[in-house]
Image 1 (tube, rainbow, N blue to C red):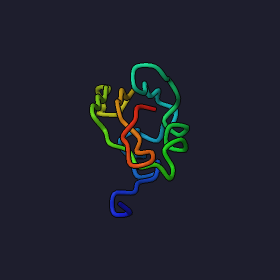
Image 2: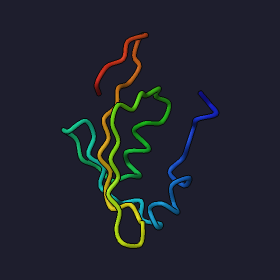
Image 3: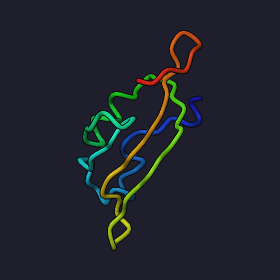
Image 4: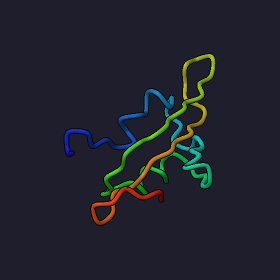
Amino acid sequence: MAAQAKTKDDFKDYLCGNFEVPVVINDKKLMPFDQFCQNLMGKTIKITALRLNKDSKNCIQNITIQYKVKKMLIWMSE
């Protein structure tokens, strides 16, 4: 849904301006947050698990996410 659309800039405060934090995707891929956002553009996803690790200043240091992508009316792991 368009109402749920976000850009990487929506997370700037939570990331303390660091868009290079590592994201572990579906236990098999690793990429920086900004690249992860680019990969999701235009896709419909369903998040099944999300873990954020923060530092003492409450800034996200890394993200672990599990999600499925909707393709041809079927939810599939990417």
